[in-house]
Amino acid sequence: MIHLGVYGNSKWSLLMKKLLENDYSEMLSQNGGERIAVDHFVVDEPSKEGEISVEFFLQKYLCGELSILVIPKEYYMQYNDLVFKLLRGGMNTDDIYNGIRLFDGFEGHKDLIPYLVTPMAEDPYLSYLEYHVADHCNLNCKYCTHYSPLVEQPVFTDLAKFEKDINQLKKYIKDIGVIRILGGEPLLNEELPRFIELSRSVYPGSLITVVTNAMLLDRINEELKESMRMNKAFFHISFYPPLEKKIGDIKKMLVDEKIPFTITDMIPEFNKTQTLKPNGDPDFFYHCFQAGCTCLHDGKIAPCYAPFTTKYFNEKYGKSLPTDEGIDLYSDELTVEKIKLSLLVPMARCSFCIAGEPHKWEIVGKNSTLEDWV
Image 1: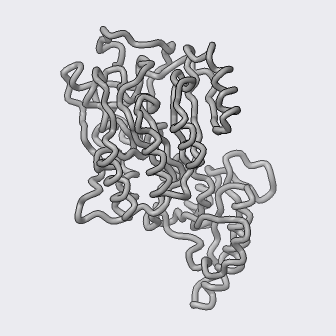
Image 2 (image 1 turned 180 degrees about the vertical axis):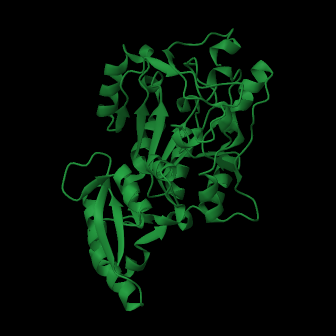
Image 3 (image 1 turned 45 degrees about the horizontal axis):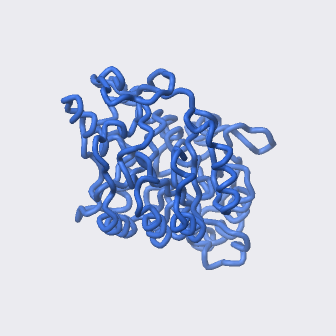
């Protein structure tokens, strides 16, 4: 008997347990394999019988009571943090499995049962992908981790090059949970509707969101509004102090235009996370809030955007922090497994980040100094 856990406690977790213990177990036994018992639902805060915490699951895993954790794809927003927590706790990547995308009526599709679960490293799936459409910004927050205030001239992502790159990625990664379109400020790019449409056409099952400071949302054109609606995309608004007087009107406009949105709480502080000396912490990567923010940029992907934007910091202050790291999507030796496992390994750039301490949010001036960042 194979004893395992399933992450979560939603209807999809319940369905995954049912399918694993019945249809999937029957398939395994008919082929000489062992049957499956889902002993626990693994959740962040256990409250019901049969639920255990991630920490308790790891204890059971390390002593051999549980051998596998299955993560349904419906938990794409929790996925990367969960995987890093499992790796920190000593779990082997070979014992983390992804579930197939489930849907109402899935039980009637017996032909899909053989594909119910796949080892994480072999699954052509990413829970998260982000990319810039503009490196510069209209707001220019001090301590911005993407260094947008240091981009002195407008820098837009080339649409034709991006189309080639995202289609190259699709050769290896067939499905993505959520795609976030960022900047800088993405509303500065007049071709934003094309990027939204392209993302939807290449990854039809993904959740697509445009991350914005919303200062320009009250002046977007009909083309962008229609693109958001037609492609089932939504705005994710980062609520910085300058937006406070406008937020009511912006919410009303989006409701009236039938464009879905989410909005953060007010963000009164930023963390200053930059250091010029290696932090000396080989495990920092596995605690970093950005480590699972897989980024696509100029033919490469990396665990976060830092290696692609640090060039602006280096140019401004004459430094030589590592840049241009990442996985070359055009390498002849690339495989799904190489992509998946490489995204779980820290980059050289990671040693120049720290958790930092909170500082009051403010706009950085044109005469920004090194002390504004380090």
